[in-house]
Length: 78
Image (cartoon, rainbow, N blue to C red):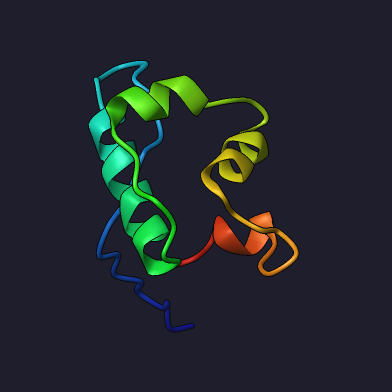
């Protein structure tokens, strides 16, 4: 049996600042997603003001419309 080798370009561990302070990275990534949809970008202050659980609330506060693209599809977007 021949094994398929998968090469990953990126691996992201979501520690939410538990082990390292990576909030800046979360903001940077979200701003790329927002830009793609012509939604307003955020800064660290705004992120801390609106971040919420469940995370879908956070996305709604950012302006995402789940009737256009489901949250589930957004989470696997490349």
